[in-house]
Image 1 (cartoon, rainbow, N blue to C red):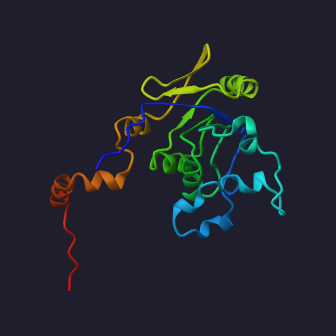
Image 2: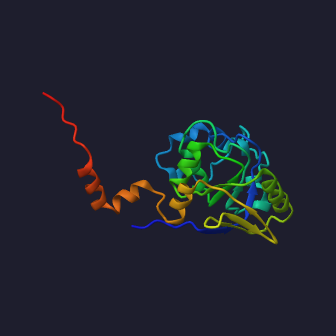
Image 3: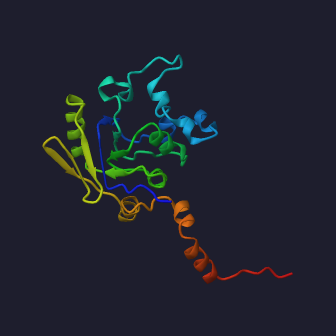
Length: 202
């Protein structure tokens, strides 16, 4: 059993800009009743995209120019609010491969890394420049290089940042803790033998 190593990814972008994109906006609470995360494909930003009568609000996700985009451009504090793991799940299962934002809420970032959804940070002026370019050239492909922490497009580029531990987990294919346990049973048993045993007195 092996995990994907995320070193480089290429795709088109969709700007979903603005600060404090909280998890309730990413996935409204009524969608949390799903039985499996597979049911979350396509419902990201639902209330941002549709009114109570299911009429489109012309959200960037539904803009024909950005159809099929696999990289989201966001603002500061992306993924803030409640700690619901459904938020990165709906983004990942809707076909998004990565998110570039000014900053991320800590729990959202951890939940994203744990399902293989890279979240990288860039300076606001760089994101604004890229968003402006993409708005005028929506077919532009962006390449995210996690090993060298740089994003490139057309004749331009910008530096990226990511905590070293998360970057290592993604680039080495060690981002799923459960899989790590399953593929290393001997190490698990060894560690278990080293741990002190707690015995309850009768």
